[in-house]
Length: 231
Image (cartoon, rainbow, N blue to C red; front, side, top):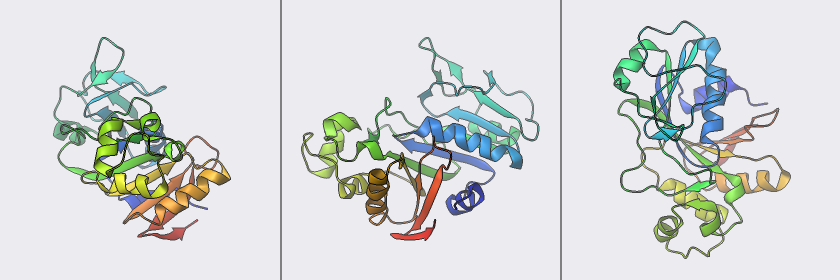
């Protein structure tokens, strides 16, 4: 069974900043990681763009003191729509006041797949790890239904928006993401999606986690350079 410590070591989620980009469950992963990291130190959740504050985590506009060991806090600047945007304090300052800083660095409007515009992703300088999230529920659907910025997603793959996303296309799209240090294939909560995840993982370089983040067993397999390393 894959445990959080194996995930943490494989992705290099250490003290300092970790950014999450892509689609298909970034907010779920952000909250999951924040809970898993509490036994190792203090955890700050924030954004490089806009996000809804995670449920159940206290919020503050600024961080004026070092967080206590095991404490979690969300920091950001409130918007009129209920979202938070970039904190007023520099990320460097926030890193000096918390052991782990988790940053949601782009948005996907709840869609499983994502193409980045020129101004995205908003990954702060100095991140130790950048994890790309892919929702497996987008594979098998047409690009126009499954992707945020579908025209851009299709153009970068050299196909039309009516094209059905295959594991090969999903993997190719993620390989175009900038600065990624690991990939999370989320929603492998059925045998069919697990099979799609494995097919996709075989095509991806580096470290890949196959996950079902909202299930009782969230971490299923870790792959390295196209080969299952731990399950």
